[in-house]
Image (cartoon, rainbow over all chains, first blue to last red; front, side, top):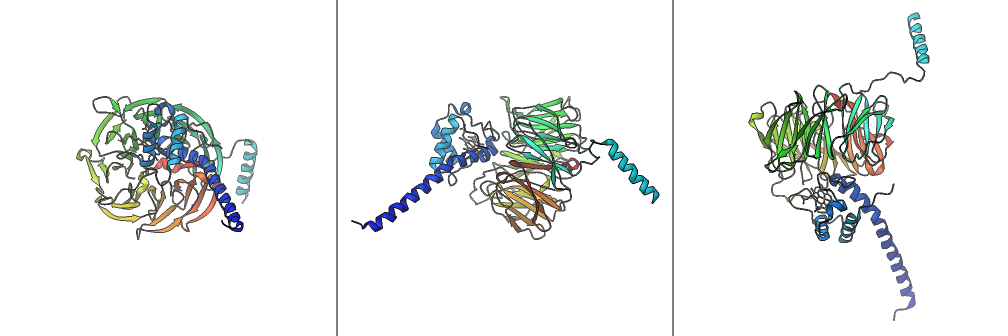
Length: 110
Length: 391
């Protein structure tokens, strides 16, 4: 048994830590929307209708297995300009982006 | 003295008489800043360093660029969505807007200023328009292979003699189309290398260079002796090193040339490559902060300013061309997308998309002079481009 004195600050610390994590993730969708619209947009278009890279609209991606899109985002496509985003995006981010692309990617809040 | 008084009096009376009419002014020191997100442009005065107008309703400007009429009064803005808009810089109005393609990537203006030419991804090819009316006068598809496929077109640049050079991303070619008779375009084809991503013509209009994404090297065509075909320059520049990811494609234009040297962005290597423009041999490499996007020589050629791809796009570095070393590292703002020198280079305007600012830097001191608020700014284009071959 740990004395109460030790546990309490510890729990409090964890709680704060937990909230901090939750907050960071809470801001993540807005960051990802901006990143996809602006920085993926430099190749796929701000409206994701395509540019040097193909369109990333629900219609364009309809027949694509989500896993292939997930892999393309994290590992890129060798021999094409599609760069690997691992290191910038983690698997949770990439999964979130794929789901949103397939459903119709959200607009940036202005 | 009496004369002068009289002249002054006349001027005052004239000013009173014209009333609401704006005073006469030139447009050689004006420019445009593209507002990427809102489909609008700000018209700026580069002498007084302020905004003098705004034109809205220009569609998707996510990869927009502009060329200028040779009287420097009109700007032609090419939007990503295929929009081509003619803007009156003096009146601050939209003169005309057409939708000429599904997906476009920029354009050029002919030597005589009569033709505005757009380069398109979808449908792949170039189209020419009457600069006065924006009526289409020519359509030149970038067809290749035997199945009638069309390639994305990149790197369009005007050449003397109403000719236009450009590159085909999917077909790996450089093409030169002669539009002296727009009803009968004549196109010559030169195999160039894997995946050209952009191109430039030297300020004298002689050499066309396409940057290649798919191989280490650039493709050079001497347009004075095109029968010699394309020559590879800087071949194998990345030899032995694993290429780094390229999160944004670099841009090429005649601004790369400083004196007898060209300063070119490497692809997948955090370097600026220096090549002698007489021998086209590599003469140096300069390590820089990240993947270079714009590598721009100050008009006098003494300095070269460089910005970088995501995620290092808040930095700008300055290279001194005597020592070929980085002499300054600046942080003008978040997501620096573009830079433009004033015609003689005493100042450079730098757009920072995520800070919603355009910062004017003094190029002698490398210090900011002024900051303008602009909504998600990307390209900055000054009317002095009207007088430059390849702009």
